[in-house]
Length: 180
Length: 180
Length: 180
Image (cartoon, rainbow over all chains, first blue to last red; front, side, top):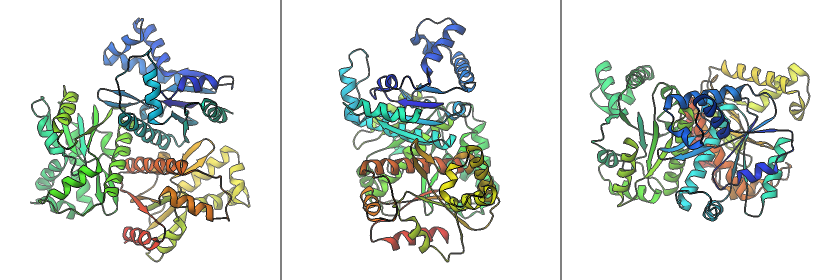
């Protein structure tokens, strides 16, 4: 399993789309969560997940980690390195989840803070809290530090791939190189 | 439990003072250590703690972590993210302690290296080794990396709050926001 | 055990040579690996280690960690903080190894990215992939984040020692200070 992470505006979807056809199945952590929450607790929209009682959210997470731990094939797991919440950066791969997975590498997709800022501003489809260059730089730093902690925990390599403006092919090529 | 950390000059005491009256009990790790060392080994001054044999220091630490692990109420634990010693940055929350606690969030209070330098220079009450801007920047970076490791270990959010010069109210407001 | 790490061009060999005569035995992780692989699997050159089947490589690593975990004397372990591979930065001290060792401190030897670049360019004896200042800066950042994770895991101090151009004596003095 290769875990691919990136903050909003890093262009993760585009890079992942370019890495299809490499024999890997692509799993999205959020989609797995939603699928299980729908089945178990009958919710019909992703936003309802956050409104589930903490106990039920934990049951959903348990079910997802059970599903992922049984995965033996060639899988790319698409998730967050950390989510920016009102209480701080919430790690996407806490050790309690990580220790159940067979991880070959963790990958962080990123770009310069200026590029990320520019992409977020031009993406009118999502309502996001406005952020400063400094706050994006802080999030990127914390993601790199988390990436190191994940790699130290699993003993697997940690790769940082830059998806610079106009250089999508470079980023795709680097990710495909890891899947071959 | 919310754990609040910060390097000397970050203004932790002032920010914590501003967060009183939120229904949280405030515990200081160093004060807990001293209380137990006083009771168990009859020392009368904080400086004597460092002179205790390593075996007794460990007993004190064990007693503190037992005390903290039994804590079920709303508690703010005030401690160091890391202490700068002659052998390097000593983590304030080693995993062996962290795994015994019920942690809801870890918070790092900080400021720019220039602000921290300025505050330390004007604080004549404490004798501190003179530091350079570069060494303060290094300590701050290591604190952020440690914060990420603590959060990855516990699966809890990691928050960085800047206490900039003349902006104490902003820092207090952010911390209070986490306690509500 | 004191663990000393550093990226290529940090001048680790020179600094370690300057720290001899302090009563510590110096062990090199790579040399231990090679010795065991030679004995167990009859290889005759270091490069053959990478060509061993993964299963045999794991047996070699197991044997090295067993050897190191039984170490009770004053030892400096010379290893990598991370190795830059085609799949990313591979941690030199995964938690699975670290938890078997008696670690007193972890030390990262480094220099500015410009100094490291300059030293690598003038070192004609080794064929290295050309790197940019930015990629060296990234490797150095990941090493510092890994150092923090190692320290948080062991609860031991993490020290960063700069080996600046023309200041080898300073770096040696700092390392010797940790061995006394």
